[in-house]
Length: 187
Image 1: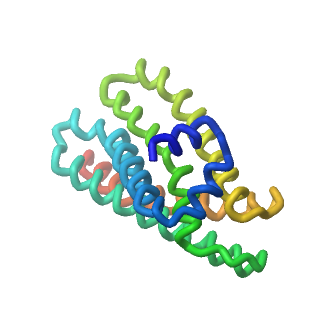
Image 2: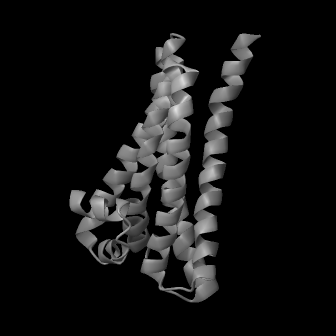
Image 3: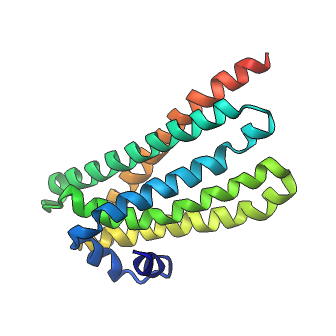
C-alpha cells in the first residue's frame, strides 16, 4: 500500500489504473480515505480545543469524518453512474473507489490546519502549503479518473467537477452544522 501511495504522491499515474484493476486494494483505498478524512477533520477542528470545547471537538471530528467518507462514496457512485450515462462506459463503483481512494491521500494535508490553534503566524506558513497540496490533489483526481476511464481530457474534467461539487456541498453542510451553533453561543 505505501509503495502505491508514494507512486501516487510522485505522480506516477499508471498506479491508478493498476489499483483500479486490483480488487485486493479496495480495503486499502477505504483505509486511505478514512485516515485522510480523520486527519483533515482533526486539523480543521483543533482550534476548538483552545476554547475548551473538547466535546464539540470530538463530536465534530467523528461527524465530519463520517460525512467526508460518505461524501467520497457518493462522489464515486456519481462518477460511476455518470460515466455510464454520459459516456457509455461501464465503470464499476469499486474501481472508482480504488482509484479515487488512492488520489484521496492528498487530503491528509488538512492536518496542518492544526497550527491555526497555535497562532496566525504559523498559518501564514501552512496556508500556501495546504493550497499547493490541494491543487496537487485535484490534479491527482484528474489523473486517476483519466487512467481508470481512458476518456478524453474534457470528459475527464466533467467527472472531476462532479467530485469537486459533491465535496464542496458536503463541506458546506458540515460547516453549517458546526458554525451556526458556535456563532449562536457568541451572542
